[in-house]
Image 1 (cartoon, rainbow, N blue to C red):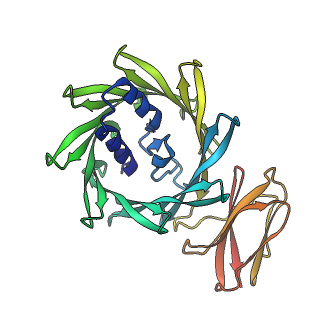
Image 2: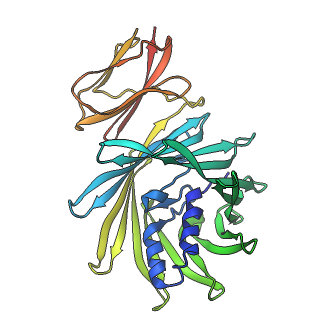
Image 3: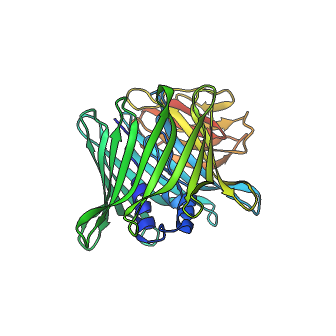
Length: 401
């Protein structure tokens, strides 16, 4: 089946369009700076961190699943990257059930809740809905925000996705927008139409549409998107993306253009560069904004992806990395973690039970020193230790006797 698009995608475009500032060039350029639609259909990315979202990121090798994504912003004053967001994914039986987004609190020097998205599946295992929540820092509760529901075609491709907003006064979901998706004879994305609901008119009004263009062997080459102009009662060019590939056929670069209605030309807007690890898993994406004044690309955001390998039961497999010691194993009450060969100064760990629940976790642990975790209160059985240091990601099975 096709992947469920981010609910934040429509929510954000709703704001752009209903605010009325997309009818001019400045608006189009502003939107182009904020919006980045990743072209393979797997995920919708937003350069604005408040609208960063991604769905089930799964490599072509079905045994690897995206464990987490770390987003960094570029600080032009310090000329360096700094942490901004962390996206963590939870799976059940191989299906993503939760996406948790944390933001980095520079004052407290720790991760704090930002938002989350919960995914539901039908009896055949197709992702048919998701609900997005944001974290209320004052009341310290999760608050409903948006919901997506999917209708499938006969091939179980996403056919129509309806988006709803939570109305607290009605204690119910209300129409927000919808996206209709169409496919070519090969099953590739062909085009999509998004509409926004007008309560006053009691009808759907056009918003954005996009067309996908392919070269030989169904390789995506270009995506052109249009925006509806209510004043012209017609579609206008909005954004265009050109995809480039490396010698292995993997996407290496996407160059985005915004339409200048005055000169009637496409202007450079954004660029994304993709790099992969030795397993051909997506490792890093770097986004740039085009500066017409400097006539050059400026760093904007960087995303680092971490993957884990799961068994058919959704439980991480045993992985051993030299220089990372977890002992004793088996253990009675306490287990120790020691990293001796890392060039990094710190690492993060989580202790997980067989049901996938996180029992203990800690961040920024110093290397070259032993860290002891007390698991005395938990029953005998097997557990998993997840460790992340730099680009190394380890999942190791431990046994309590």
